[in-house]
Amino acid sequence: MEEGDFVIDTRTGRVGCVGGSGGPRLRLRPVGGGREWDCSPGDVRPATIAETMRAKVAAANALSRRGR
Image (cartoon, rainbow, N blue to C red):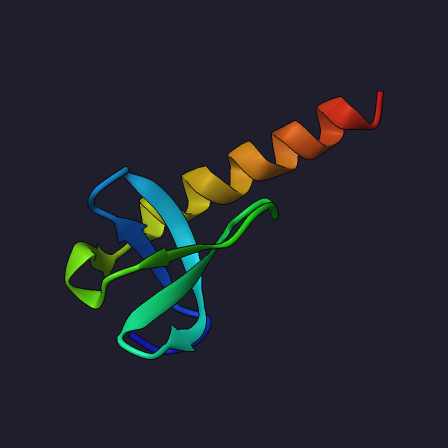
């Protein structure tokens, strides 16, 4: 996995964007922002286009609800 790739944390089902690595672990950022989390490279798989788009739409919807 490279920085900027969208992946699924198979432990939680969350979509994250690879922000780098800290030693043997990956740093994942939530699509809509928020707290990063660490994940083992063995616990991620590439996100499909549909999974990535679903996460982006959910993040955009959450942002629009906060702006009301």
